[in-house]
Image 1 (tube, rainbow, N blue to C red):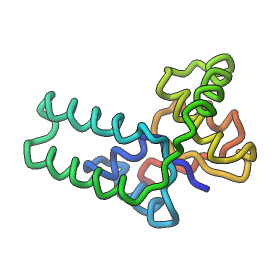
Image 2 (tube, rainbow, N blue to C red; image 1 turned 60 degrees about the horizontal axis):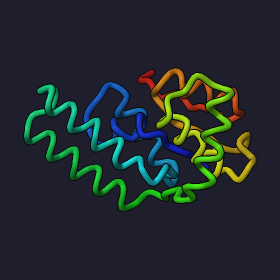
Image 3 (tube, one colour; image 1 turned 90 degrees about the vertical axis):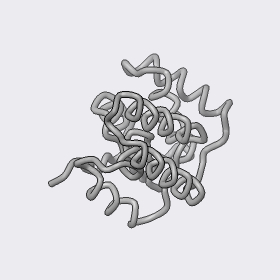
Image 4 (cartoon, rainbow, N blue to C red; image 1 turned 120 degrees about the horizontal axis):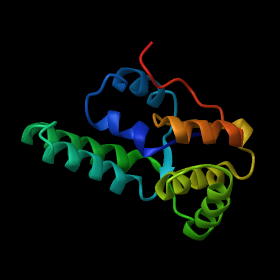
Length: 143
């Protein structure tokens, strides 16, 4: 299983330097992510549009890409289990709440066997915590 944090899904919706590498990873298998990733990604798109980093046309394309992507991914929806994992992760790692929920969702999706699974992320702090938890963390930056 390859779990995808919202930070790695944003470049699949908008064009960024890491987009080609992440698209290649996405072609390798199904995307598994937290049920609230769509909200995080939409937030990133809308913030970029407000800050004039995306034109109106690019914003619309990004939201269309998000709709298509989210229709195909597998969502972790076990909110109580994810919450419990996130609380434990906050005690072990310096994470923000949303990041702890993402990593908690990955742990739930892995079914307790994280070493057999990957965590795709572009956020350095979260990626480091995922690696310390035992996930493999594939390279997400352009080579």
